[in-house]
Image (cartoon, rainbow, N blue to C red):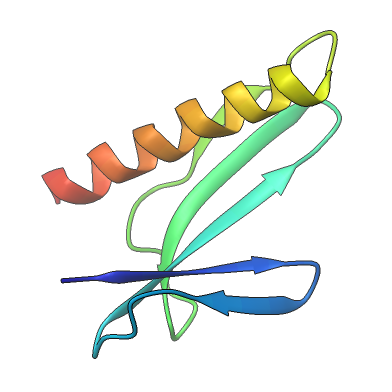
Length: 80
């Protein structure tokens, strides 16, 4: 089983500690939201995915976009 470490604002939250950890890296910007999965060495495990930041960028719309991006990253990781 793989675990995921999420880093928000410089703090680290770890779940299901395991010998192999993946890092979900997100860049939420004003024009695009980007995401990828990295290993603990900072190496990309998949090519990054990108989508336009929703307009209007309400919290609900941004959360929906991030959710879709995370699902896309997980699907790409499984296929590799």
